[in-house]
Image 1 (cartoon, rainbow, N blue to C red):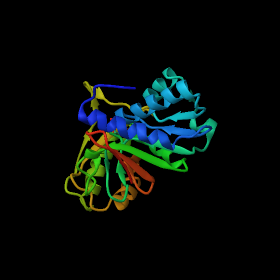
Image 2: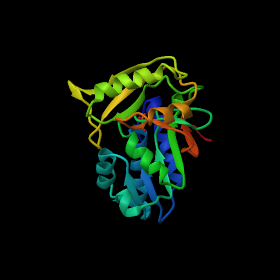
Image 3: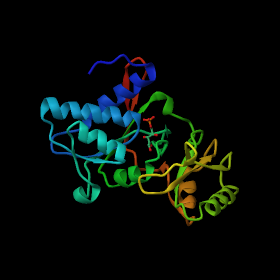
Image 4: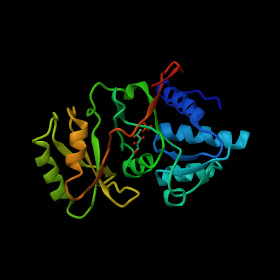
Length: 236
Ligand code: 5RP
C-alpha cells in the first residue's frame, strides 16, 4: 500500500501497519474503531488477501464490522469467539502508565468489553496522543437515555469532590439530535481538563446509576505503538 498522506495520517498509518506484526495465523483479534484502527483493519485485509492470513476478527463497532467484511476478513461476534488473543485499537490519549481515554468515536463500551476479553491489548496512536496527565480530551460516558439530564446533574455534582480541573458535562450531538451509540445509549462528554486520579474517577463514575461505562481504560493496555509524522515508529 502506498499513499500520499499528511504527517498525522502517516503517523497513524505506520503505527497501524507495525501493530499487524503482532498478528499471527489462527489468531482471534479484537478490531478497534476509529481512523487509526481503520488503517490496521486495511493492513490486515491486505495480509488476508496476499498471504492467506487466517484470522477471525471481532469488531468493536458496526463501522469496523462493515470495513472488515468488505476487506474479506472473517468476522465473528464476541459471544461466538468468547476470548481473544489480542485486541488492537486506537486511543484519544495515553499516559506513561498506558492508561487511556477512549471513546472519541463513540464506541468505547464495546471497545472496553472486547479489550478486557483479550490476552493482550495493543494501542496504536500518533505521537500527539501522548499526555503527561489524562483529561485534556473530553472523557466520554456512555449514558442510558432514560433520565439522562438527571444523570448529567448527578455526574457534575459528583465531580465536585474529585481531583479534576473542570466539571462540565455536555450531551454529544449528531447534527441536531443526540448521538446514539451502537448499544442505543447517549454519550455525555466530561470536560475535565486534567484528571488527577484516573483509577478513582473511573470507579466513582461507574457507581452512578444511568452511567453504563466510562472511557477510561485503566490497566487494560499492554503496549502502545506510536507513529510519528516522519514515518518512524516506537513500541512501548
Ligand atoms: C473510538 C475510539 C478511537 O480509538 C479513538 O477515538 C481514536 O480515534 P482516531 O484513531 O480516529 O484518532 O476510542 O471510540
